[in-house]
Image (cartoon, rainbow, N blue to C red; front, side):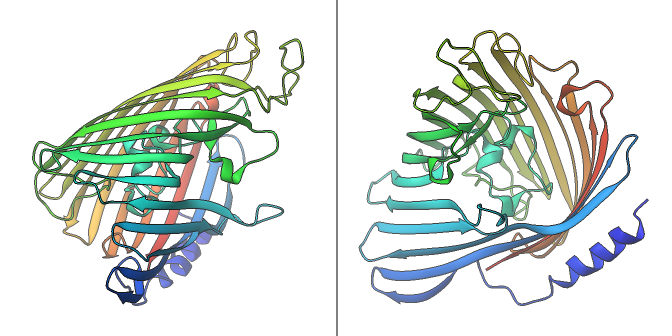
Length: 386
């Protein structure tokens, strides 16, 4: 049952949604090929967790507070800078998200140079603005082996009237050596103990009924189908293995330097008549520098993360009210039990994905692969995009 605190949280957050919305981004200057656009997003979240056998905890916070500037001086070129302020605290006051130059003068694609998402995992490529559940599932979570932002180059291409799309990328990417997860991030937001390395990634998607963008939910009510295949490979360059001694033995308490990692993704998405379904399966392998390391997700210096997610929704009131549900699982070599989560929720759209309120209830079993470690969670979030 939702307690009084949750009710107050719902009232407080929902009140913030009743304001005028513009389309994503506001063009403040434009002349010929020259323009400047400003935009951003505000996500306010109320979160409550109830671990089995422990007292309930809750908080209200800024889940995301992002602003961007985009502009161009020349035909076929543009630049974009986006930063995150929602996690400001201590010495982490600002995080860089997108920061790139783009050239789109090719007949069948665009070239990015800078900081951007690598392209692996359809759910990770879906913007946080356009998710059906409040939080991403395992298959899109950068804390569990899904590569996120890299600093380098990426080419987005298409063929056959966009029925075939593809992405190839390469660059620098760092990794947090915490053995409870496999957390990748860009070198732009580096911590001093992160492993440094290089990554290559690619994906191909087939859209038999026409191009389907990286977004969840069915607003157009047109039949669309996408099937995708993705892969990546990451290698430690050896420059910053702070938790491995000169003999190759791990010296960290809950920390393990990672030597190599690679992953494969198979994904699909379907939209029609207000229904939407997204399915994805990932297999991600990783090895530690110390080949004997046991702890967290690792066993004898190895782990294979096997992840599955199925999400679906139906617009009971077209473009206004959507009922959603999802199930997800993850296993790892160091787990005793498969970690599973089941979710139900409702999304209320005031202006599609630009202004909305989302409520998700999630039941988790065997958290971190520990037998009997269960937890119920409640997420209530508003989004305002400008």
